[in-house]
Image (cartoon, rainbow, N blue to C red; front, top):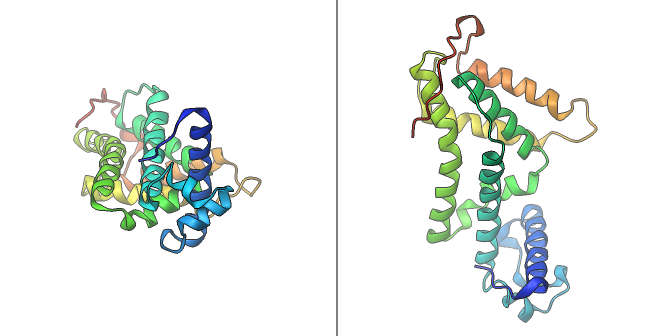
Length: 210
């Protein structure tokens, strides 16, 4: 856990996290040293340890903050929907829009999870499951209402998350497609995965299933 004192300490800790994120994404967690992080931040190694006692603490903070911000951003949208179809479309659009320009965060969240020690690993997995449970709830509702035709809710949810999270590996601002166009394509693909047929839509009231 980071230790900071006052605004200057908070700013320094943020700079350490930003630099570490770039270094971990570029070289991998295992290849980056605390001395290297300190040097890139313009700090003495001893000063770095005043904010983060270990490199593991930095990795934990990066992953936890990413997931907490993700959940807060989703909650802040306060989207109301009347069907599983509408809820799924909203989730897909949010996920693409939020992640499309965060390649470093996504790389670390997935590729460096294996380097977390048991306690922070459990903490991160709990937060990840909280986010993914939103999608599972939507899929359960759609299956129960016959809006969706899918074999297994959990497997389908994991496949969707993987597919959508990969968008940042190829999307670039100023390219052939803008973010809105990418959202449209992904919405159509995801709806095809769940076998949604607009002609047969019943539009039941959505009830969140835990």
